[in-house]
Length: 97
Image 1 (cartoon, rainbow, N blue to C red):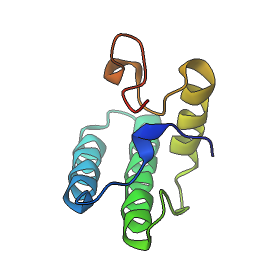
Image 2: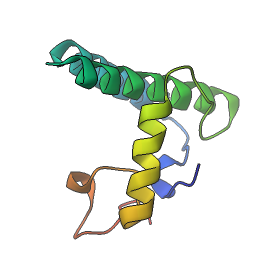
Image 3: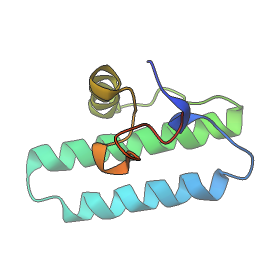
Image 4: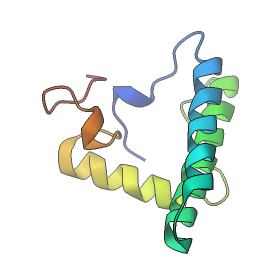
């Protein structure tokens, strides 16, 4: 999986990873359709993969049911060179560059 600087691990990010997972769990609870629920669960699983990766000294560890999120990231990298959604770009650019 290609990624930008937005996925790099930095010291002290364990709490940030937990917060990201919690934010995604909230979105799971707010899902309005089966497809949206599957997307949000995939986001949660990707968050767990990031947390486990952080603990293991890696960027990411593959998790069960993360495929939807990984495909979303791959599409974003192809389209505009950042794993994050367009609303997180800074002046149209990846903030991790």
